[in-house]
Image 1 (cartoon, rainbow, N blue to C red):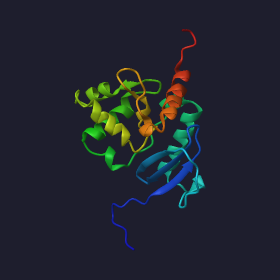
Image 2 (spheres, rainbow, N blue to C red):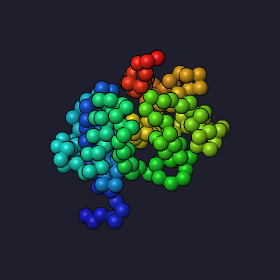
Image 3 (cartoon, rainbow, N blue to C red):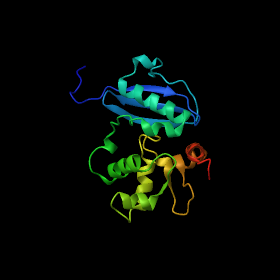
Image 4 (cartoon, rainbow, N blue to C red):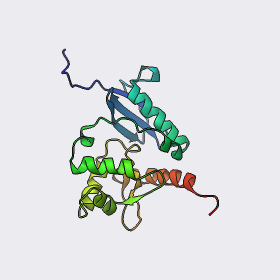
Length: 181
């Protein structure tokens, strides 16, 4: 079987985290997906030896391990390369995800409305919610930092992961606290 010139050769790896098992997929151009699973089951085709991973997935695993040790530590690390079609081009989806990744830092939050304004469409708060739901690389593109204008967290992972969102926000906030205040 011959491969097309631009076809990605995907690798997949699972890693444990405080919020559950993470399944990562990617090619030598970057990470395609991160899936937070709430149940552990045997999955075939996963790479268990990190030495066998391409450099982009290895960098992503290292970035995530650092994030879970200390959320603030990743501010000095480069983001893992991302290679998912949703993140390419100039679509509203790609813009919103890129803006979220680059401008909403660890320990900060933004409302759906504010993110829609940052992405150039102030009336698209609901569309931002749809974009967050389809985010292929949560944690790296931190959709958990997007809240309702009321300050409520909204539904994370369709409501199944609300406790995960709360944990992530708490993990980032507790490290960002200034002991002098």
